[in-house]
Image 1 (tube, rainbow, N blue to C red):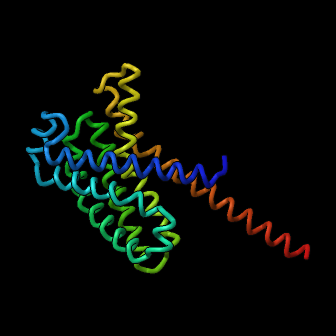
Image 2 (tube, rainbow, N blue to C red):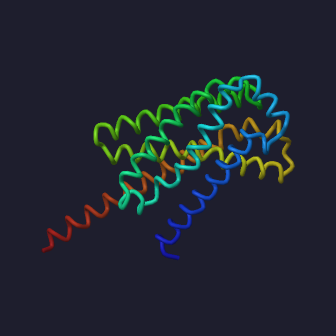
Image 3 (cartoon, rainbow, N blue to C red):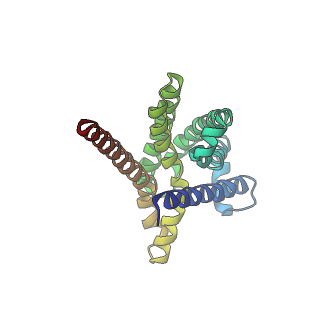
Length: 215
């Protein structure tokens, strides 16, 4: 199967998964879905839980489209405004998540997992913003990939929980693990992709030099 077909399919799956969880977050906030016990817990710190849920929802609903080449190339103004919206809600959702981390399910391991995630999510968003402000598009793109990889943890978290449940692993045992792997594995994949992409660019440059020398 051609690589561009695989890439497009992966992008579509990523966008659809993000939209699905983003819409679920909206329905959770509106009390149309979700465990009632979770709603009661979230009501104890309503302002910060709302920041996290709504911030995450907007990021997931918008974020995937920022990686669609046709939008970036043909509608640059839309891309910029969506980027501003995205990073604004990363800030909102990240602050909410940072406050929520110490009271999350899963004990101390999960607290640290979600806390580190919140810090890195905010940091990568700040780096992406700083890069685009100084006109460094390449660096901006790299940091945005890292940032969305962490945001996509909201999707992979549910996938891993489902897999652990299917394997018979109790929620109390699975959740501390998932609090880390749901976003760390996403980041590892992005870093692998960036290294592989850089290697291809170096290989292409060396091939061009060799061709030029032969001529």
